[in-house]
Length: 210
Image (cartoon, rainbow, N blue to C red; front, top):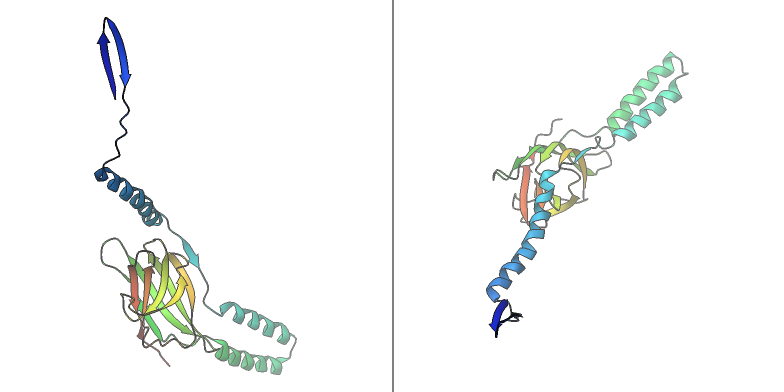
C-alpha cells in the first residue's frame, strides 16, 4: 500500500507493507483448486484419446504352424499316404480347435450419457482346459485406470481382476485364472479403479451348442 504525504512543500512517498496473514476464507479455495485442477486434468485427459488393439483368437497361431508342419511332412507321400494325412489333419483339428463358445454377452454403457460401451464379450475354452475372456469389436469410453473384471454384478461388489484394459477399442484376450467360478462371476465389467466408476458391462449367458 502506498501513501503520499506533503510537508513544508515537500512530497514524501511512504510505502506500507501489509503483513497481515491471509484470511482462512481465501486459503481454503486456493487449496481446493490446487488439488481439484490436477485431478480434473488426470480424469478428463483420456476422454480425448482412443487406443486400439487387434489380438488374434487364442491358439490360432499354434494351430497354423502345426498344420503347415503336417503339410510339409506329407507332401511326398502317395495317394494312400495322402488319405492318411487327411485323417490325421481332421483328428488334429478336432483336438486342437477351440471349444464352442459357452458364454457370451453384449456390452452396454453406464447409461449416463458419458460412459458408453458396446461390443461382444465371450468365454473361450481351450483344449488344454484353460479359459480366455475375449472382447470383440469393443468400443468403450476411454478413461483413467480402467480394468477388466469378472464380477458378480455391474457394481463389482465381488470380482476377479483380469488386469488393465489393453485398449478402449478392438479385439483383445484376457486369461481367466484357473478355478474361477463362471457361474458366480458371470458379468464382465469395465471399471475405473482410481475413481470407482462403472464404464460398461456385459452379462454372460450360456449358449453352448454341441
